[in-house]
Length: 408
Ligand code: AMP
Image 1 (cartoon, protein in one colour):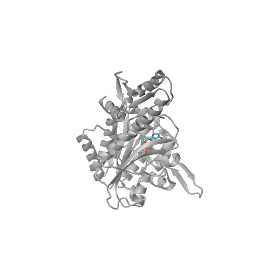
Image 2 (cartoon, protein in one colour; image 1 turned 90 degrees about the horizontal axis):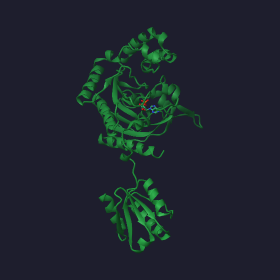
Image 3 (tube, helix red, strand yellow; image 1 turned 45 degrees about the horizontal axis):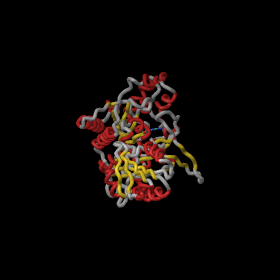
Image 4 (spheres, rainbow, N blue to C red; image 1 turned 90 degrees about the vertical axis):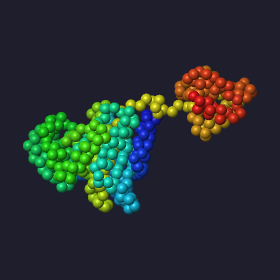
């Protein structure tokens, strides 16, 4: 709604300017893709693919899905358009709606908005740290308080199977305490049990093994670098062994920004490395990493005052009488063309009523155009905060009003 939109724009503009600072380019991906793309990349055994996608056959019976997230489509575009050809290192961002059929509640919607960033072609864990730094910087620029990065490593294809086996044994021993979903997950996708929100499951897995303890030497070094570099940049963080994220394609570092200000839906952003996905979708074997911010949730917790982003008119024009309206209309058009924010209601109502409306719009100045003043070739400009009124000669009015606005 108007009113909320200005805040969203402020968040989006702040994000875009940050992306530009760090060398990201915008990419715009379709709202719909073939279902297969999401099923293959996100993973058949994930909540998203199992029960949350809006999928339907089109007129020819092809299965189409409203995008539940952006990474799969960006990877598809990276491969399809050979965006790696000139330089495999590419950094993209995109902002837009995503769709998941969930039970709607505060902070969880069926159409929600994400700000996404993806980096291709960089192996070094330093880029993962840079992504976390970008998130922390964005939140600081938006005066968000009480937000902490949580990090974990999911290992790689070499060391994860070992951990999965260890975890499966642990879960088998606990199966009587797990919810039916987790009993099913513990066979097909045991990592998912670690982020189950059901209290009895959380209790049951308290002592679950930590993947960080079973990482292979390469993954272990990688995760050490992440931790040490975050320390070096003075970014506080928590290692969270339960952070496995809901999507299958993640490898090595995963992270989430959690906040105490959002209630149950406490993740404002999440991301991580997904080194195998470009290859799995038919592209070259190139590493990748990225994040998604929940815009709906972020907008809830920004600490900005309305005056930081709501723009009020520079000049409200109160015109009295037909002749004045006609002249004022010309000026209003000229002001607007010059980038001076104007408002006027064309009503020919009393000065009192027009001033009242000017007040409501929080205009900084009111230009009072009366027929008598017009005859005298001058109009009144009232500064609404100081209440000071000056007479402005109407020749060259544009420049004179501009100067007054700048003076303010
Ligand atoms: P994900 O793509 O699941 O990793 O989610 C990334 C971020 O998107 C989360 O941290 C949330 O802030 C946001 N998000 C995910 N699902 C929803 C939803 N249904 N409604 C609102 N925000 C969501």
